[in-house]
Amino acid sequence: MPESKPMHCHTCKGKDRPHRPLNKAEREWLKKTRGQKNADGYFLCTEEGCRHPRTTFKKNPFADEFRIPDVD
Image 1 (cartoon, rainbow, N blue to C red):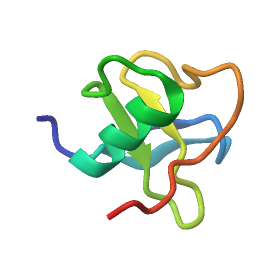
Image 2: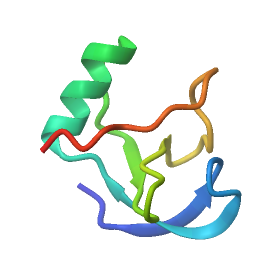
Image 3: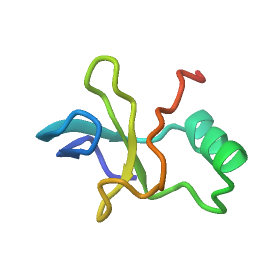
Image 4: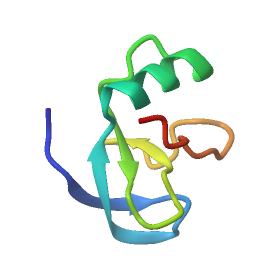
């Protein structure tokens, strides 16, 4: 799985925000609550208070804006 990397964040409105791949619990939450069949390609913004998900190529892959809760 890819390592953390800087990416644009739709919620933080900034470039080069730190993002990391979703962990197993976060992937399961995304699949269960958002109906995603596969959540392996998602990254999570790790700026304090953000936790907005995105993919490598889409800054905002969902129609509505939401944050993934801390499910660990």
